[in-house]
Amino acid sequence: MARPNFKSFKEKALDRPDVAEEYERLSPAYELRRKLVALRQSAGLTQEEAAELLNTKKSNISRLESVSSSISPKLSTITDYAEAMGYEVRIDFVPLHSQKHNKSLQRTAEKRRR
Image (tube, rainbow, N blue to C red; front, top):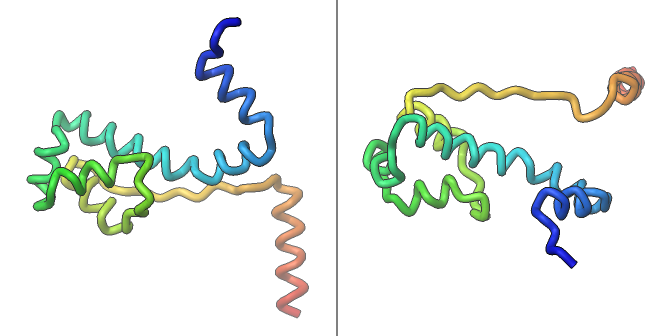
């Protein structure tokens, strides 16, 4: 029997509700780290060079970009990093639920205000 490739493994794993929920929960952290690496690479910098620009150690840049890091960076650190790479930070929020769910939340909030 052939070994499954990553894509088929991921699809099968995400069929499990608990795995899919955790995947969605962690998705923003992974996306942030992918974007940090992409910014640095598009600036043509190594981790060592980025560290020098930010007056820090290469290990701190490595930890900041690592998807396995358990440390959540502060917004000011992300902003400093982005600016050193020639970018600005923009934050966006998107609804978690459908419009129907949002209207239900609004009704609940209105009832609480009364």
